[in-house]
Image 1 (cartoon, protein in one colour):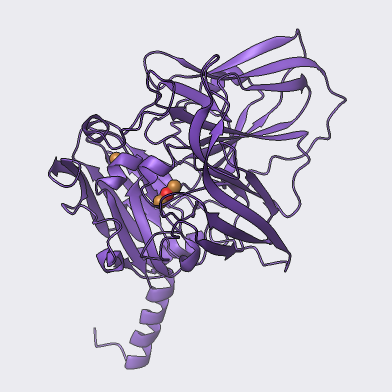
Image 2 (tube, rainbow, N blue to C red):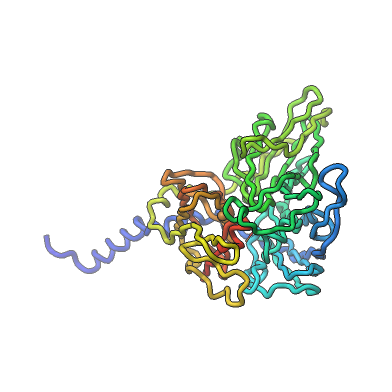
Amino acid sequence: MTRPIPLLSTLLLVVACSTHRSPSSRLEAELAGAYPVEASPTGVIRDFAITAAPGERDPLTPGAPPLAVWSYNGTTPGPTLRVRLGETVRVTFSNHLPDETTIHWHGVRVPNGMDGVPHATQPPVPPGGTFVYEFTPKDAGTFWFHPHVRSSEQVERGLYGVLIVEDADPPPYSQDVVWVIDDWLLGADRQLDPRFNTPHDMMHDGRWGNVVTVNGRTDETLAVRAGERIRLRLLNASNGRVYVPDLAALGDGARLIAVDGMYLRAPIPPGRFELAPGNRIDLDLTFAPGERREIPVRDTFTRTPQPLATILVDGVAPPALAFPSPAHAVVPLWADALATPVTHELRLNARRGGPFGLEWTVNDVAFAGHSHDSHDHASFHLPRGRFAHLRFTNQSARLHPIHLHGMFFKVLARNGTPVDEGYFRDTVLVHSKETVDIGLVPVDAGSWMLHCHILEHAEAGMMTMISVE
Ligand code: C2O
Ligand code: CU
């Protein structure tokens, strides 16, 4: 056999390249047509004003005095902002708190300068200061917003609200309802325990409350009629508590249609979903006719089931319009993604030291939060548009719901066992000693935070920055 002529070898090379692309470019291609599906701006600007201020609200438990909180626009939860996909959100924010603050738009793909990370993407808003947040959400879904300065205290005091981005042409649900779940740690005086970031919070899974509320109430009830088609959005705004709502109680008409704001590949029975701090799920619900009945929805994460809220089914609605569930997103399978080399491993652990006596670390570094040079803390870079395989290795015995700003990811494996969840997330619960592999393709340039959404762990160092360029 003689050496092939140069032209032939070039041809062979071209053929080889087109049939045998690198695993990474194949994975990127699989994503094409899925995330990122970016809405084009319609030019409509939706103006909102949000003021953060100390105030009082109704007590959470009967007979208690009014509860002193910090809130957005005077309510806890704060306002639910609703816009349509393609509209521009403009929020004029005023800080009437005795502390500096910012607003972070959790799960929303915003320009980096609107992400609300103090010192990194904007200077914190001082007491008496204002800031205008403006962005056009790229995805329809359930999002939320909260401060990113001393979050373990500011969120616990009541600062959080909901941002719903409706589809450009929303499906005709008869009700579209949000349940914001939070827990509050009250002292003997029935006021918020003023001790934040305690050694106990730090050594465990953050601050867990002794009163659980849905939409700020201990007796939230959703009244429905049989035959109605309901979209129910659940959001965990707690500092540290994880919920596993007993969704089986909702019956056979319940389907999971979105996670962390993003639609599923196809609707699925909701099953057991760990709603960690930061997570959202959207459900598509119908209820069969029958007797008037009350369906208690309980949390089953801990050994003692906690009542969350109640659904009251009473009466029959006129026959609803049949329409397909909006859960038909293109979510790549990424079947061979697990075999790609790990781009970055992030080891999650704790050690003695730091301002709270215990530091939470990512690769042995405790984030020096709120220092003026935190933009220098990028732990690694990710090239735009390239598939990346990250591995979270939890070396500690505690929970770490890891949240990534500015992008969505897909869980590839837990403890090395492949999983196909059929949806993207922005927050994944990493259990004690567990290893979770994720895949993602970052598309937006900037410095994006990766941190534990147990806010006390984040405060004590479990935060890092990823720069995408
Ligand atoms: Cu909801 Cu950086 O967080
Ligand atoms: Cu953690």
